[in-house]
Length: 264
Image (tube, rainbow, N blue to C red; front, side):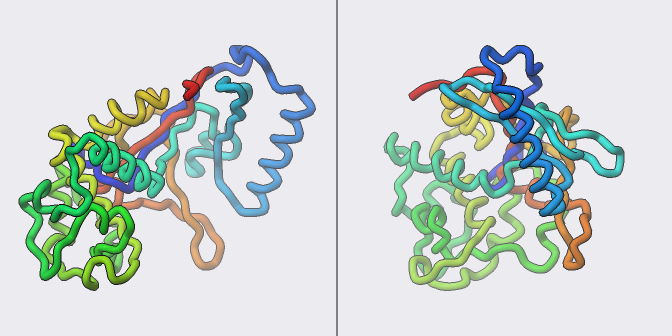
């Protein structure tokens, strides 16, 4: 799991900045209204915890945490709480792929086997263009796979879950949302770039964006301030959400910048 990341999960690290350090504070009345609105909406939607921030002119003006990041141990959510990005990692993976297209290192219309030789041939060509658009016919989770806790040591190893399965349809003929399709795209990013998915996203996406606190979500690492995941049952109760995706998908975390965001 230490090296495994493909496209589906990111983790957000923390902001960890005292409110007094912000160069320009929001008016007290504005902060009061913000916090009242947030807590009211959290109660309405039964949200266990969250963090929020306000940025103007590339400066963080205000941030705070609400509720709990760990319900069992009554750990309050803070501005510095670390959250998984989940499937927001997919568009980040797509950005990585398109950067490589611009660099001439990844051909959107070449068979993925050019970049992933270990991926079996299918009855039809399967390309990065298909994977990016969820039209490749690669299946999504089956049964309880989303809760799978098996450890994989690389992105390529994680493909073993689905790589030998038949495509659901001829690529390009239908749309079908697929996390596994983005797992495959993440491995193609590695093959085209010659570096690991985590290293590539850190150096080519996060650092230029000022996201210097983004990292992989390794379930075995001690990541301070990491929040538990929760979901609602059919009855509306909360339960801990042990997403298996973090074992094999590009699991990433992101933490808000301390004071200043880059301007473009």
